[in-house]
Image (cartoon, rainbow, N blue to C red; front, side, top):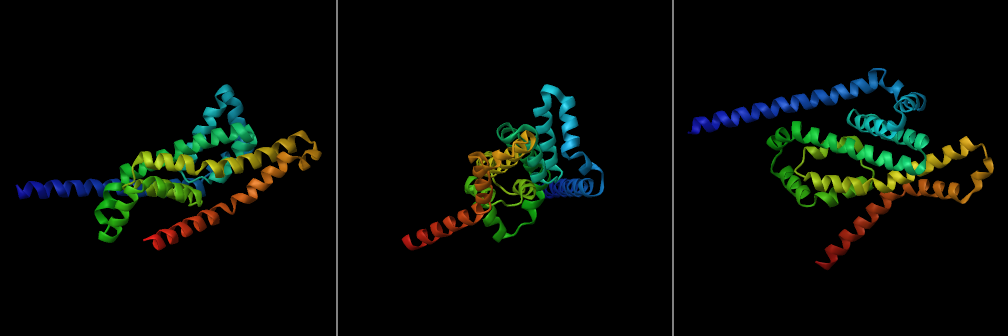
Length: 241
């Protein structure tokens, strides 16, 4: 009986290690493809514009697919977001960017969960295990906070998959947490592109332009505001106790 249990445990551990190796190879391959191949040449306004022209009415779907795939292979999210805003405008661009980001972040999370979670759980000590359990209990709040303070997007997608956080907590926390930053960035880029294309430079002093600039500047202060509010909340709870 004990022998069977040892064999089962050993087999499970080997599977976990194999999955972890596959996961590591995937990460390294994705980084290599982005840094040392011609993939970056295809992620430009001209290249993506030609692709979307060929896609016709399916252009939004094609863009969201490209965005989701880009998230999984570590393409810079700001580049993909800026291109989406420039091509589709501030409002439709925001929608397509948000959907593409949600698909990509969910896929990256599931890759991390499927390939790396077993191995991660087998090597963490008691102290890290307590943090892991705390993340599971407060998954939505943890993910939301990290998204609002602009924690690196793609590493967090894969990293959260290695924790015990529930997928739905991760999905909802991500969806809500990236709305503000995504809207501000796409609105700013999309508005600037509209003025550039129109050639009407008097629009540079319009309310819409000033509003987009104000939002863009405000976005840099969001992490600081969130951290300050969180810090004051922690102090208040300590005093109350």
